[in-house]
Image: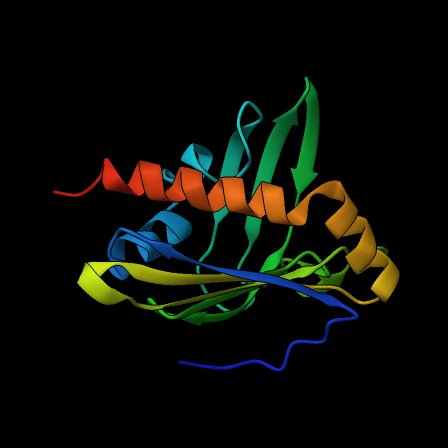
Length: 159
């Protein structure tokens, strides 16, 4: 598995063991029908998903947060089946830069004991100020909730 040098000034990261197979975690993150079930902490909702799973392909979602629609557009930077998924809001499809990007997300997956998955989520920011803002917004709580929702949802998909 790839290891990354994390910069404590600009990166946020956590690792959790999920009690579901890695292939299923990958499926949940890469098929649009699954994203609404875990991708944003409840009671907020994902109301639209448009994915094109390839480097340079779109990773677009729309959130409903407290009745406000939030349009999130981004692209995939790296897609390594069942191991690594990297996407950013620094660009939109067609490599169009955005004026004020927030972060690049890096998901690392590996096999864990008893058929589970070691799940690492990294949020890489351009500046220490953006990192701090994300931490203050609740990165650990929010992404932790997403991991919990993902695990719960994926358990229901086990055949």
